Image (cartoon, rainbow over the protein chains, first blue to last red):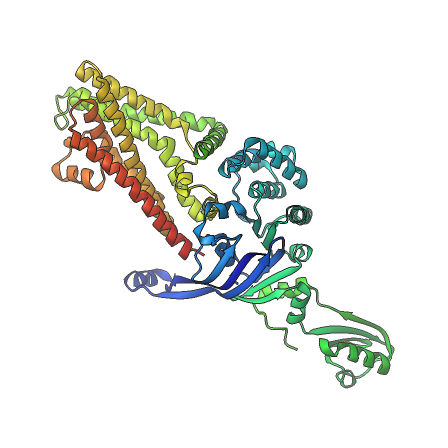
Length: 331
Length: 261
């Protein structure tokens, strides 16, 4: 059963086309010009109950817009959308009670009061009876390893403790679908790992569906067997991380240590020569010819050592984030 | 029922937050006392000279000032603390959290917090109204008190709706905070009876900014001078203003959900 279903999802914004400076502002006042920006174009995917899916893309790719569409905060311009059996933008009570949104850079906890107070407010808002709320708070506190922090003003908590308390506030009503926008933003490595462990644990215990965006690849590799990569508003990839890396880099790097130096001309027959320093050689070889080429290298050259390296996925995605380009690296 | 429980939690946390800043409350209390003393002083200066404002007696004009003080107290207690936060919600993007809660968003934004420092002012205003009315009439007819209470409630609704609509425009303009301050300044016109103003302003304060309904009408009711149609009009204006504020919020949200990124 699909918990999240998007078909041909589109979102177009109308933004003011304004020249900079006072003159531009005045001209815009008299003669308004608008430009449409297609933030999300024809995106289709479906997520089954209990899946944990990573949502990747460079800044401005349309990730947040898609999350807002899924939570019903904005209207789609086109396409069909269903989340937990509801049309999100109607924001019906039953829908709102079955989802939650955690935003790493925004907080819903009351700054001056202990998290427990915010939790009580949420319990009332979601109509959770007092005794049940206490039980759930104890359970979540146990999973998140929070204790006396719950009775300390939020402003006195560390970023990691605050995020854990945010998660408690977001999960008190036992949502079936979790939307997490950068839940580990700004946390140190240990705190990141704890949040990650908790999310995996929570998903296992409750069978909740999780859709998460993160700039930290470790979040994605640790939690998400499946990733959606969105680029310029379009869905570029829907599947495992391994296949994604395949699509992004259809080549491999092979490092050789030779017994005797060889001329570049001779080495170039095997693949693109990336570096040559005495006996140290670096070659780039298309993935589909890798095994054949490696056996030829071993058979025909005086090879002392050979290492095939797979570019780490972090690096690939990092490059995508930096360059905003999804073309396979040209070779 | 659920809303009442939510309100209890809302205000419980608001009070707890304020206890963290006790000095603030004291300062607000002092500012309020200074304000009221100033108004009384001005009125006293006028009446000592034998100047009457719009044909109102000394006690009558104090009833109007009482109604104004009462509403000003409400402003400090509920309107300003809640409605001035809407613009922050829009700026910080935390409006999203409010919109995703299974509670009416206008209810949340209008009643999320309370500032008890405004309550003494409300009480003081009510006492001033009753005391001055007794001075004018020699007694306090229960019917008049009931009518005045109803119309003061209607006045509160009108004031709330005006303020809310203005605060809701922050969805488009973000910096509406100044606009609500202008409104607050304009409403201080309600300190004095509407008939004290020149004809043009009188019209403006009745039709455009319904200041007349805020203080003069409840005061007239307490003094037993209000006609039934005028009272009814006030209640109708309040109902209409509330309906308009809800419709406007729905419209603003439609814009927010289709235009924001």
